[in-house]
Length: 360
Image (cartoon, rainbow, N blue to C red; front, side, top):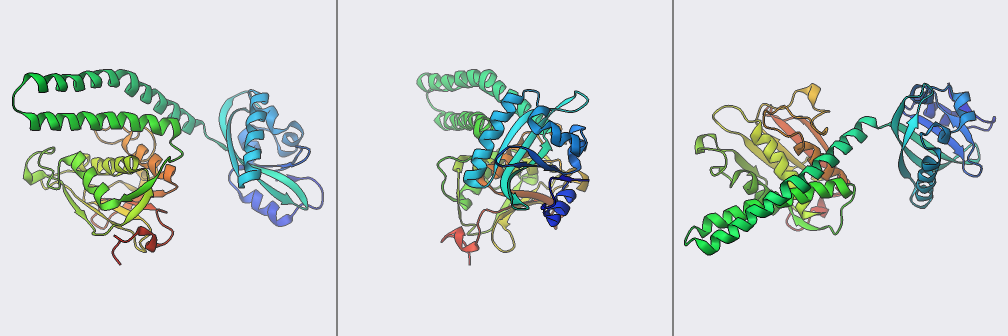
């Protein structure tokens, strides 16, 4: 049962708070006193609501001073923008610790100005992020040096060998793509939650470039064997334009295409279709491959998750991170063909915003 101070507490808000699955803590905006909590607080911290109110949220932190500083900054942001988020290492009643994330927002409860915190256990997410940071370090230190050496060797070959410029050009493009991937992963780790300097991006051009980077052209002949097993791309004309980071959205499509090609089975190859969503506010990338079983669909975007023998587990995680950094949503379900269907929504508030190149 939730605990609220005073008879003026809004009973309807009390019901809403009780129904929330996350821990909810309301503090007086002036004094900082905890005036309301819901029952989930006990599940998360181990203290019953009445005891938690007496203890206070900062006392449940491994480092109360650091947690208070982070909370103060988040509350300042919340008063300026409507909400703020901070992460802190919390300690349960039994002494075990976990990483908590609090989203705070100002509100009024029973005539009292309060700051409401919604608290979640994000230990698994924090560990995944740390693993991704370690992976980024590997890319930076263990791959950048040999990549630079390989690029230098191409320069030497240009001066020593007559002919073969076409192949050296291709090799330089491959090296350039590898360097871009290294930089993109580092960017996602360092500031993956925001997009800097977005531009208007022609989606048909981005899709074609991404497909060529993954399979070498629409017939896939250069990268994936003979024509019999070549992947195929079908693209709707006039996908339109979107405001985005061109490099990152290109990586999003590359990883979706790579996922479809890697999981293709049989001799007929895979066909990937790119189109707009019903209503024209997003993009669909669908394939006719084996698809994703229903129980795995909520996990495919998790860091490290893969079912392919040669998969790294980073591809769809980066897809999700790119979508999140742009404020878009991405969902996976079964395509009409039985394959995988990825829907990216929130790219436009209105189909008209897709630009002059969009098909009416």
